[in-house]
Structures are given as C-alpha cells and as structure tokens.
Image (cartoon, rainbow, N blue to C red; front, side, top):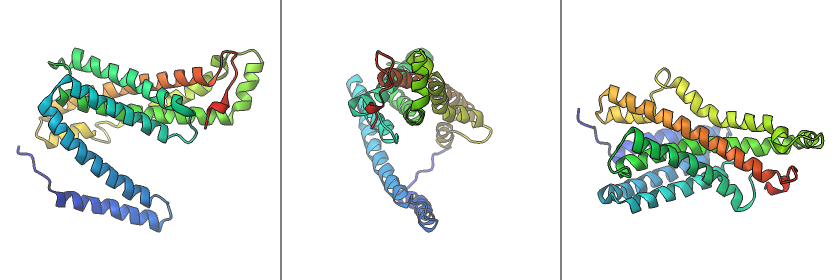
Length: 263
C-alpha cells in the first residue's frame, strides 16, 4: 500500500484543532492557552529541525555522528527532567542525577536491544539506534521527573516525621524507605498503565506509524511489544537509580536530612 504524503496545508488543518483547544482554555480560565500555543510551535520547529538532521545522519551513518546526536538528546532530556520539578535539588547535582540515571538506564537498555535482540549490523545504524534511544529517553524522562518531584515534595512536607525516625536510631534508608518506595511507584505508574491499555484501549504510536507506513500489522505488533518491554525496563531502572542517587545526596554521612540542598 502506498504511503499517503502529507503537505503543510494538511498539518495546518490539524494545528487549527490545537488553536481551538487554546481558545477553550482561555474561555474556561485554565491558564494553559499560551503554553499550548508556545509548546505547539516549539514542537513543530523541533521536529522539522530533527527531520533535516536525521536526513543527513542517516546518509552519513558514522558512529561519531550517532554518539554526538545521542549526547545532545541525553543533555536535552536532563534539562527537561529538571524543568518539570517544582522543588529541585540545587546546582549541577540536580541536573546530574536525572541525566546520569537516564544515561545508565536508557543507554544500557538500548545497547542490549541493538546488539542482543535486534542484532542490527553495525549496532549503531542510525535508523535503529536513534529512534530507539529517543523513545527510551522520552519515557524514562517522564518517569524520573515524576519520581524526583514526588521525592523532594514528600521529604519537605514530611521532614518532621523523617527526622523523628532518625532521632529514634533509624538509618536514613530506614527513615525514608516508605517515601522512596512511593516515589518509585509514582515514576513507574505511567508505563505500567500504558502496558495495561496497549491493544485494548489504545494503539501505541510506533505501531500506528508503522501500519500507516505499510508495515504488516503482525510485524508492527511484534516491534511494539519489544519497544514497550524496553521502555518499561528503561523507565524502571532509571527511576530506581534516580531515587537511589537522590537519597544518598540528600542525607549526609551522619544520617541527617539536608533540605538546604533543595531549591
């Protein structure tokens, strides 16, 4: 089946729906109209730019270019994690924790998928490596941002409870265990909900795109199952890593809670 090409006029008609949504936000006093319009324009520009970049990246196909592209994606994702938190860990450490957790989880899972599961040769083939890493980073970013935001909020609100447990002789791990567990669950809930609804309530984006592009449905389904499993693993590993790193940073060697490290 031939793929139906979309023109800028077609995209413009779809953008009208977003504009109507912004007007509804204004009418209902939701305060989201400028964010809807701004981020809609930002998303359009970003995707058009990345389309041009990927065109040259796929043509080049070198390891250096793939590594450079992956690094830019990781650094941008780290910034988004920090920006989505109401109460942040101060300084470069707050940025490093989210970025480091995504690096450990998303990059390791991507390498396993490319080398062991998909077995693409060479493993850094841009058509596989870049989209796969992008999907992992995007979902891991959301999970880590939710978990860290929940952690800093809970520690500030329940400072007295945590410090009372510390005074009773508990270690920082024991005193904050329930909070950290709750944060890990919060970060993993979105991907767990996605797994529960996939195929029954929704057709995931990658699968839909492949089907629209002419891929046989069964092949699209197999790739989508693979991607969801990888995203679940990457998100889970990233959330656990981020909470573990944050706990070690927010409590000192004498097991004291250091909320002055939060901004």
